Length: 605
Image (cartoon, rainbow, N blue to C red; front, top):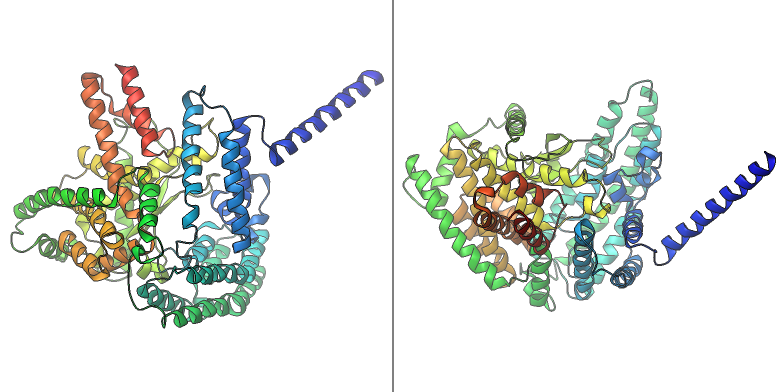
């Protein structure tokens, strides 16, 4: 027995050593299998970003959560190393044999090939962006990570939260260095960006540490902990530490950024699109291809937008006329409807609370009636929440935040309630369908829950696919009968008009050299949206060129593929099956989605 036990122990030791050696080889050298390469690539990428790990919550169930007290390295030195690694990883990826891949293996290869090649092709444009802007800036996304995604379940989590507050200046000093580097290369913000960022930062710190969202959210999360987990005295101590860190670390750092942007105002006086940056026209074409996953040009997209605007205008005029709004432009008629007392909530806390409640009712209603159209649906629920008031002025009308992978939170649909006049009742259904069900929550939730795929397939996103699906979902809801009131359908058409107008104004700003004011006027004229919301949207397109194009491009492609399938299959066409193909493969470049749909049609025939 001793001999057997000894030999067994030796064999076990050999297996452990072999596994360790194989693991080390996989981590530091070319993995033996392409699937191992996928896993290595994802985890190396994820572990470089504590912020991403906080959002995904991959390791918390294993007791690993130190990343929640850390920030990723945002220095330019680290960025250089990461880009060199990206190119090396792509070279390694291309060295694997791929011609024999089939099924999901082939899809995984196509998806990652597209994604990595796109990133590598972006090398000339690595500094053609604005790390700090009024809409996508780190000064808002970093606090939002802590207030919306970072969880506080015990003293260790509280310690991590405070540690992040104390070390936040390190991250922002690195980001500010990146801003200065871009300035030296001629990548300067638009003038309105400087004005808005300064006001944003000044407003955030003006009332002191205890009034910042970083403090109030922490206090709220601590308040939910039972006494057995953390005593009242301990909560008071942690709050005092958070207040000190915000007062002595965060606020002075935000003031430093404010001073820098104030100084930039002497250098910047115009609001030009990216055509004004070095090689700006070529950069914009790259933005188009990245966001739409197509080779369409700015002129082609501009013309598609103009044609869609005219098509939608005819349908909107018809509904408005039937409702008795017959005088003036579309914008004037929609404004009259939007300002009708029957369409407005009270401009107080009770009115805003009712908006959130009504959104939840809309979502729950459609969630209970989708069985005839979908064979697969996400397990995660969706919750409606208000955008942090301090961020409302620079935020879009709404956005969706997916649940973490451990299922510890639901998906969240954030609504902007800065002005109740921006939430007319006839437009609410369409917004809820887009952001929640059957829009982003369905698409992202299903992708996150897919089994047996490389993990990057669960989390990777392509804007044209995801936003195209959400816009397609708006039309689906109408087709399923959820717009019984014609005015609700007007809300859908207005939302689609909004996306069609985006094709015109985004290309107008960055390719045809439209001014900020011309773009605002065009959107006001054709959508009837409130002026404040239009201004926010147009300024968003300035700082994120090409992203707004993806919605309509993706929707048009999905509709084209559905009609092509119907024509080819006739009575054999099954909407459930079509939705399965679109949703159960994760986010895809539109070229890959088209191949999958065509292959499914060929098999069915």
